Image (cartoon, rainbow, N blue to C red; front, side):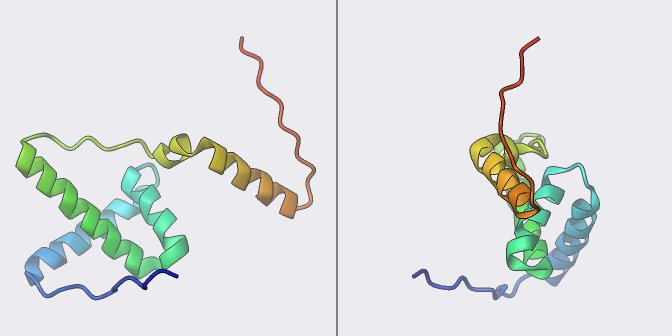
Length: 112
């Protein structure tokens, strides 16, 4: 059994927290962004507020890497998780269709 993760946010700069909160809320509203997709994935498991804090952390981590390496931000693709876990995504889709009462058979697409 794993230990529950802490949900406490340590005290820090209240102005930075406010700015990160605003940036996170704007970032998750974009339906075609990596951070929006990440927010939706975390929200289903952990809840909306914890997902928002996780996005704040992701933004802060990205800012740190940009400052440390002197690079511009390159956003990963929105469907990054789907492409990384194709088998898992396929199995989840098949399971959902079977739960809806469909009989599923997979056939490879013909390469044209």
